[in-house]
Image (cartoon, rainbow, N blue to C red; front, top):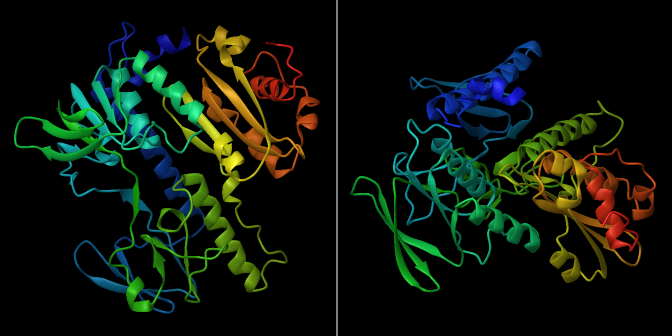
Length: 410
């Protein structure tokens, strides 16, 4: 009722009709507020911001070209490259920003398309596919691999595909867009499928096939800074092969996630301070196997650690527990009984190898596994930690009970 009373603030009328422009405007307003908050923090902490295109010139120097073409040299003992990434482009999917778009354009389309083809079903692809389908756009997802969200546990992929199809999203796996014709009013995509070639027509095509690092033209080659597979090579503290130059975030190896980039930045700066005797302790490097991943479609996906297949491939004998959210009082009360929580433990030592969730609000509870794995907890300790009822989070405990044959709520 509270949501309905304030629905207009989200660009939605109480009849269920959406004002697409108002929805986009609100989303950009939220993003702008966060951006201005960062700008305030920069000013508060007396950080100078120089706008322009930066190019590495020499040890301790960056040349900045402003929008008017003027140049200036900015100096610093340490230079951290944090140029981020952009939507990856394939030869057959050259983006024009109007009919063939990337994720940035997908967030700010001036009008809602009646139909959209989404190429790629990673986090970006399924999030936009879910959003546009919810708004009433006809959505088709094309995925080159055998299943959607291919980096997730296989059971997660099956559950999401089932829910997407139930809500009217068309999914084509083992399929590849080989060419796109934009000469007409919309787009015509030629798709190679296991059943032969097919033609898909839509107003817009969203290319969501990954992220490319922004490393072109910034002076890496001239200085001899090593790259590999389009990313800047660094050690566990963000140091490149050239002293005084560092790289963090999407332009470096590792998951292209905001929380990873943030932590990499902190570790990089703290290690610089340690090397200069400003800190007594060297920072602890990131364990990239314990980084949570969250996908904000519906149902939400949250995961960390090994999938069941990865654990078995790594030689572990596993104990697996799965608890359906249909048995969760909180999920049922909220009207969202879809999905499950799946946990994976090492049968020999009880190590918590991974957790994979799909369902209502699960992105808020994956942290229990992250902290538990960091502290090297065992199943016994989690089961002896009283979980509040009714919550979605108690489903983690319930899944662990299933794994060890102690389930009482199934």
